[in-house]
Amino acid sequence: MRSEQQYIDLYRQSADLIKAYSTDVMNSLRDEAFGDFQRLGFPTKKVERYKYTDIPSLFEPDYGLNLKRLGISVNPYDAFRCDVPNLSTSLYFVLNDGFYDKALPKSHLPEGVIVNSLSKVAAEHSDLVAKYYGKMAKSSEDGITALNTMLAQDGLFVYVPRGVKVERAIQVINMLKSPSGTGSSSMNFMINRRVLIVVEENAEIKLLFCDHTADDSNFLTTQVVEASVAEGAHLEFYCLEETHAKNVRVSNVYIDQQANSSVNHNVITLHNGVTRNRTDLVFNGEGAECNLCGCVIADKRQHVDNNTVIDHRAAHCISNELYKYVLDDNAVGAFAGLILVEHGAQKTISQETNQNLCASKTARMYSQPMLEIYADDVKCAHGSTVGQLNDAALFYMRQRGIPLNEAKLLLELAFINEVIDKMELEPLRDRLHHLVEQRFRGQLGKCSGCNLCR
Image 1 (cartoon, rainbow, N blue to C red):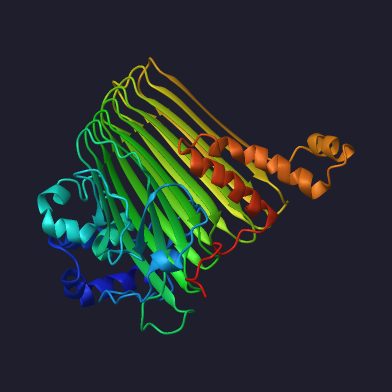
Image 2: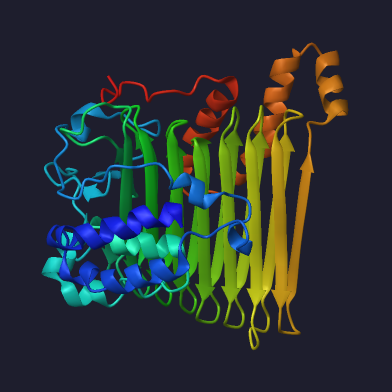
């Protein structure tokens, strides 16, 4: 209980302070989540869904928290230049866990659409936020979700009312930066961010989340995302991580889909330290469809663990899942995906695929695709491969004058691009092809023109 105890003591000592700088809707679940965390603790490797990542050890260091909400003296719109420019997006920033509202995009959102601070909207429209907050992410079922629920003070709220289609993509930069007055940039700093996405009936939105670091601190981020996708609604949700080797990211995403809705969720990890992504998606209405995709490029001692569950509770739903990893040096990758087809979920169609390349003898990959089926009229398949670059293909390319390193690059690009090509947001797709090539060449570093890290 060593890892848990410091957070139990923290909450006992600082609960009133945490609540004072948050809002009633978030505070209403806080004490219950604290009780859940005391009971559950951090999941260990003995817990099936967490067996590939040592979660308790990630939380052992003494991390500082910005409970008094100290400001960050930077205008990210002036200082930041993203690696994914020229997307014609509406650009917003979340600094650590706080929505940056001192400057906003010039483009106007359609009437009724909200992109704003979660705590601010909860204070102004408590009934709207309370209807969804904490309903998908159950603190009673997961220790990380319980910890986030008891400590998170703010985050992001995205709301699209019935029938509204947001044509321009929403790009959110999640920027990690030590707050003013905290001292050395080498300190340990913890962020607990909450995100609530509500897409009402027949509404549509495209979201791109980009995670970046703005200084050299040791960061630990917990993030809980809840996405409610109503009947006939469409959500495209892309998550791109470009942080650094000192960053630990533990993210839980919960998605609820109603009848005839569709979700495309893509997770791309280009630079990181330790990353643990969990995605739980539930079909609660007939005729819904989802596409879950992920690509990972990791080297050195990076660790990336993706764990997914797609729960088919309704009939006539379709799920497609494709995750690909390229691992080099001493990198460690893990993928575990469960397709659960419950009683009555007839006519389910599901395909789950995990394919992996280990470019060095010391890289390690753990792969565990799973099917659990309780209906008899379904079409479900799953598969996994772990291998190295094709020697025959390398030989063929070298015989035609292509240097070995370039031949490896071309094969790796061809392998990973299958995931990127499934993205519907064309400008992002084109830009990612370039970023992935840079990453394989070892050229991808700080975003061009960005002043935050200087």
